[in-house]
Image (cartoon, rainbow, N blue to C red):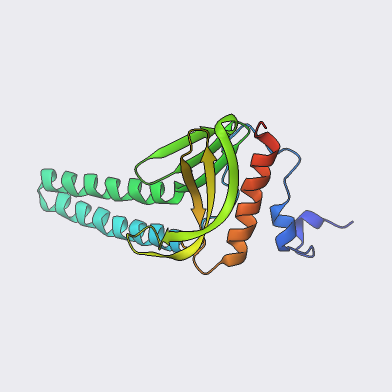
Length: 182
């Protein structure tokens, strides 16, 4: 009696990862791509820093200074929250619209207010820093003429991963073509 769920004999290819599952809920917000290695590495470094700060808080608290230990604990909680927020940054889609999650600000645009989604060549920020380089960006044009860049090929998710950027841009454009009115 074969037990395929216990074996590793099936092929895992990139095409199988991008297919939608039959129970996939289009009403919930989801990121149509995986977080990039730069984003994950930065979040892991912050969590490592938080672990050292928590260790310091424990040592300080056992040494007798509860207020300083509490301050260190509060600092560790802030670093953990920043690491988790860093992992949430990106473009999220649902049946209701597209959401651009930034570190400090989140912008949600319903599909009915999006007039166009297209990939353009333009100066983009390198890893979200003030330095700009020539690159590609998936831009959503809104009804009021404003253009909102959703993802770029030089952000923390797609730096040095051109194929992943193209696949994510195509996926977001497909969501827009399916749910955008007109």
